[in-house]
Image 1 (cartoon, helix red, strand yellow):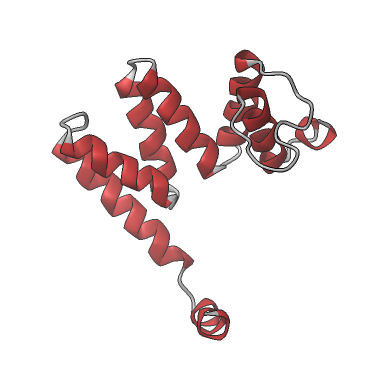
Image 2: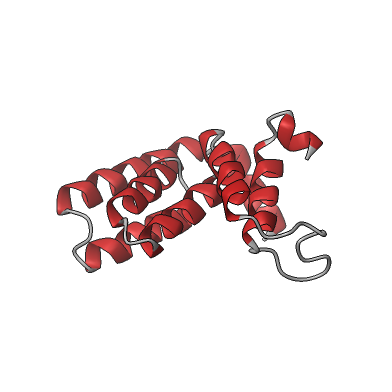
Length: 131
């Protein structure tokens, strides 16, 4: 909670997952009781700070609540920042006619641009070493 209060986006994301009951495995929810309102509040804080996973979770929350337009907007923002799962969700939504061709193409271009900006010779060398 302290780290989340200090604005650490990964802490907000983890707390959001805990309050929403999305953590599985050892420790599960770390003793946190399910509280969807608190969970979404932490997810939103993480998303605003740039956490792609938070954008993805919020997108699905809206889609599951029949607000596909809002869900798509969160997926688009996440994809434009280079988050693959959000781009995959937009592809799926485009296949189901939930987003327009223009929205899909714009998001795909922005996603690719984001990935291109992350490329560097040093990263390529590191990938070779650690693959």
